Image (cartoon, rainbow, N blue to C red):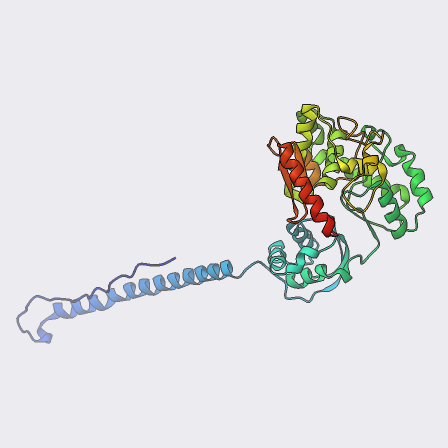
Length: 387
């Protein structure tokens, strides 16, 4: 705050002219002089007290200003001890900061977010378990997480978004002492792991993508049950049943659409748009014609395209030949794609093609334009390996 400058006012005592008189013969003058001296003391005391109060408040205000510009609370580091931190797939920087603050790895979430903004490697943080120190400097915590060498400290199993049952089984077998035989035996009897009735006995799409800690008490059954339980928890948190009903779908169909989005779009902002294309086609009675569902049936790997033979398959997952959604999910969707399936974008699009050159997706409701976009994508892929 600023204060207005106050001009100084000179106070001059102007006394009326008096006849000269010897002091000894003027007792009234002595009494007046004494009154003036005694009256100044209270005024001076008040002024001293007033200045002291102003100084006291000024110190507080200065302290507040300093606090405003001091930045978020941060530890000096380097920290000590060991704290196990689990970073989940798709977890945001802010969410990481909140978790690290809760575990007392950093002093504040804001300090971690600021440090991550200043470190371009922060975007490379992997989903894994990390063994960190308590009371670390935020910049050191970001640098630690961004170093791939520190990922996987601890015994964990990570299921990424879009992972399929076969991939999940292979990961569990690789990262634990559980055998493929005992894992598949449990999956063949889904009631033992709590698979919901809506899944129809097929665990595909219901093993939630996250990082799971493996302890001495973890069993194959408890691990798979935890994956299913997290899916059910996400369904409740995101109110899938109510959202599906609003769209005229079932919860199982929402999971199915979300799993398709994991493969048909290559970035978050495009998920709701692809969902809209799917719903527009369903409303118009058009075949979805999705290469992702055809590839799921043919087990094709390596690119996003399909052959004429694959598209001629009788599989119910062949959305070129069969209208409507496929029978079930084609992988494990994460929260972002589930939310997109529940909240599609507004638009009249009926076609989309990946724009590999620019890392986005091209949408249109014009078939001729769609063919041109597809030709451009295929031409790009002839000379580039990333698609």
